[in-house]
Image (cartoon, one colour):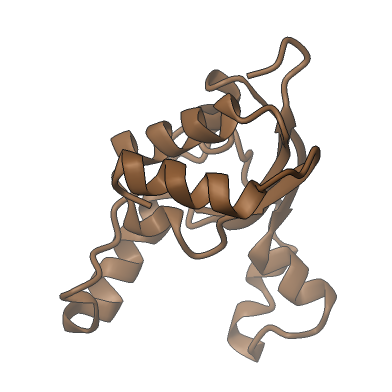
Length: 149
């Protein structure tokens, strides 16, 4: 997904003759740099049949914590992308945010958090458009903007 021609060919093959498509890039964007994420967003925008995009997103602070804690385990797979402005990054590319769900709060709702993280779920959620120094990750659903990205 990092090379434009290969990405275009993969999209063409995957989309075929479809008229409405949803793209899911879970676990991908973290490994791309900002230019590659922007280019991917533009390529998805260029395909009229792509109506929605679901992705996972991490804050820069969480990304840095992951780099430090995973260290040598990520030597061949560096973590790169975390937009400081969170979902606003994709809004600036013309996408409309229709759903945002914090991973931490979803895990708490489904009673999947380890005991030592449960207290964190009691804190207010970070603003997904202004992540600041929060350690936040979430799942985001994007749709074509009103004027169409």
